[in-house]
Length: 90
Image (cartoon, rainbow, N blue to C red; front, side):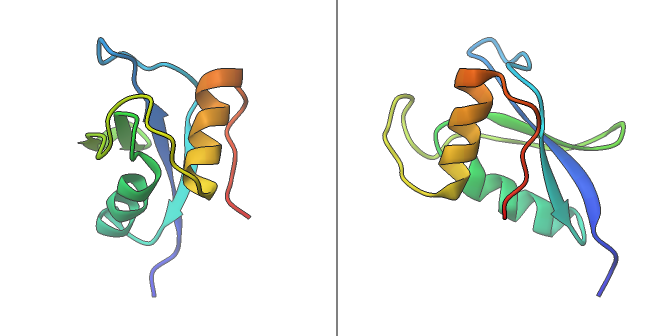
């Protein structure tokens, strides 16, 4: 198993600009990081970065304003609504 790398997941606004601080996603490789990012960004468009390299952009799976329960959405809601510092899943 490879060492975990700290990827940065940035929520984007409607114009495609960064809308808040990143959520740190720890993953062993780009594929795993994108899988996690896809789970977290169900109703918010996001960009996933590793240091200065953009891994990809995640398009929302659900329409804006959709109510989704779960840890990932709680984290993203906090990031966007409260402009909180980066959080980690427990």
